[in-house]
Image (cartoon, rainbow, N blue to C red; front, top):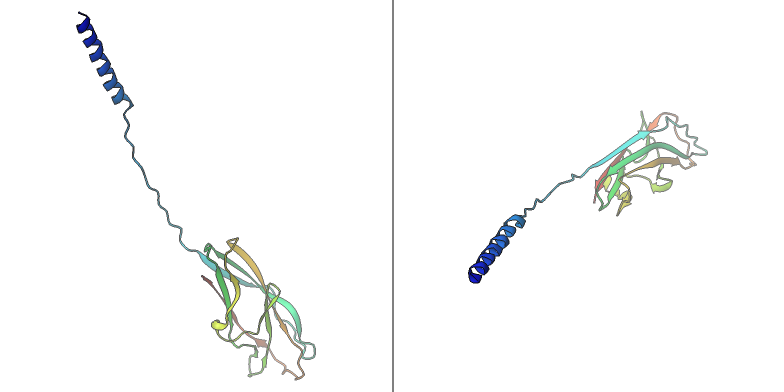
Length: 163
C-alpha cells in the first residue's frame, strides 16, 4: 500500500507540474514600428522698406531692405545663395548702373553677380534650430561720377538648398 500511495503522490506531482507549466506558459510576439519623416525646406523673403533716396555724393548708408525666414529639418546643414538680375541697380529706362553691396545679418556678402554659382551667403554645417530669420541690407558707395536721375532697380533671388 505504501508503494501505491507513493505512486499516487508521484502521479499527482507530475500532473501538477505539467498543469503549472501550462498555466505559466507564454508566447511572445514583437511588432516593429517604422516611420519616415520627409525633408522639409522653405524660404520666404519679405520687403521691409520702400525706395531709398541715393545721393551721388554720399551714396547710401547700409539700410535694411528685407527680412528672410527659412525652415529646414535637415541636420546635415544647408546653404542659402543669392543672385542679382542686373548685378547692380539699373535705371529702368536706360542702361545706367549703380553698384551696391549686399549684407546678410550685418556681414558684407559682396556685390552680387547675375548667377547663383557665386557661392553660399549663408552656409550652415550643423543647424541647432530648424527655423531662423536673417536681415538683408544694401549700401551704395559714394561715387566720383554723377549718376543719372531716374528710378533704379534690381531683383535679388535667394535659394536655400539642403546639403
